[in-house]
Figure 1 (cartoon, rainbow, N blue to C red):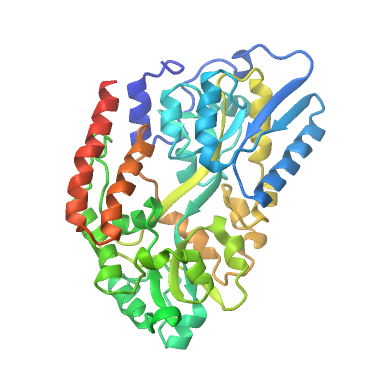
Figure 2: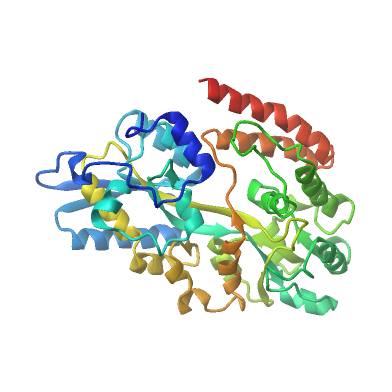
Length: 437
């Protein structure tokens, strides 16, 4: 049981995306959970991040420490590739960081393991307002009506466009409005065909497919496809709309030839091709802004994804801050979470160009909307169409199956229908094994 909530209720809450208004189910004052410390308070914080992100985070933690003389904060950054292995090892030993990063894709598993400190009691006690957080990302850190953390950065995939290449080829630029029905899959194919010209080192492409999960998920959503059933108990990758979307992506490479093959991407990745001026459109998020802003050789901008048969849609992703249930200093840990989630802290992190803030007010600031890109507001409007994946405690394992089998799609060794048929029994085995555990 997790604070009176069964494992079944937790999973059910994750599947239904319970919003945060129902945080009143927990009783007792937060400060009563753990005896309050006497003397020096020591907190540890662990995240991953770029050089600039870690520098700013260290500065923020030093500021917090100055404002809270009785608290000592130890910052323990870990590279992303080893982060979760180390975190789980620390938790098994009972010495996990007091506050740490947790991707939304890993959050359900940590809830089921009962290792996270609920923040709902603190929210209620302090009358802490959640109104300024983006609702979707905030929901990703709640389960069965209980809030466990806050999003630190949010992301909704958008398209980055090489404006100069469009103009050079005489191709109309994409619409900047998600609601524009003229910007659809058909016009996408037409325009990317026009942008694809030349041979060898001088060849330009209309689009570069991102072969990772967040690269293909938006197209499935635009076509109304699904990956898991609403109750998260079975895989639905053979949904005809899902298959059609994945086949469309394969066709962009091997039928329409508007996107490079995996073999052609071995020497230069998607961003490298785009930054060299050889690609009209590529997928990106606001967290990559600093990379794109380093491009000075041509004008670039943003565009929404084209509309599919189900309308406009994109993928929601991000990372959040959570607290360790075994912390010796819950009140101070909560205070640190509040500090790192504050408007001033998010404003400072935003300046690195490596994050889209979790607070709506910061995203609507002049600093956030300052060009380039010329249409930075597309990062904001994307949030209206961003859908979270069907997250569950086994989600990382499910995505591993997706990635493994979809490699056949990207190298053209199998059709989308064949690949999806291979995926379903493997994912179902994972889901059913977890349900019977």
